Length: 361
Ligand code: G3P
Ligand code: CA
Image (cartoon, rainbow, N blue to C red):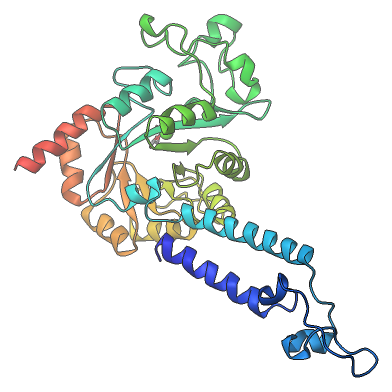
């Protein structure tokens, strides 16, 4: 149902409800009651015929203009909430548009890490400039409950934490956001990126979404409710896509916010119901897809262990297949021949070139 049609139907329902309600007779609200000669004690001050059957049965006091005002306010709030959730599920929502696109999606893995430090603002800026359909990132919860963007669970590889604080394997979740944001997350990659900070998830969303891009948020650590709350507050439900290797997180997310497009990364360590996956063959298969679909995810986000058969199986189930991390044209071509729907890459420009050259064949 289109948004206009939905709105029209909602108003019709509200109008009918108002007509039927014993508390709400709009036809007489602004007119003075019809005076009649009293025929006995307790005679009505206005025609009984105008009372609804329910009002007569229950001997309900007629509504006052104040009652009507309250009722209308409640109906308006209900309508606004319903419209909001419908908007997130509209085919025009960016996440749904991308999910339903009939072309290959090119997704900038951690931004454009071929040429800029991963998971930093310069990296996403470059990915967007190169035309990435989505800019991917990874987030954790900090010690003080903020969402910070970094790939590894430790700070050693992509920041100067070890030099600055000493020690090794310094955990991201053991530091506050303020502490983490004193670190340099760019020098390890190239001196010209010295002083680049670890960003908060909200800051990246402001930047990527504000620039007209779509963020592919990968949850590395933290609960689903916090992420849903943040997306709702920022009005970003289905303006972004959310993915995780943790299928229990996805299931929980889907239960709280069923309209949000989710990607299930695989192969996971456990299924959506918590069963461990040890012993299961790693390549994408019908068995994985049957479990994946139970999480509410709409895309299987797999490594290059996919096959034409598995991709067709996914499509039969209404799922898309996005593959990571594909940086070589030869491998990209092989996967595109299998029918995959998206390439997650460190080199957005090269993957666009690869896709463009296929179109010339
Ligand atoms: O988007 C897929 C990819 O990001 C998953 O692997 O380890 O790079 O987060 P990883
Ligand atoms: Ca990732």
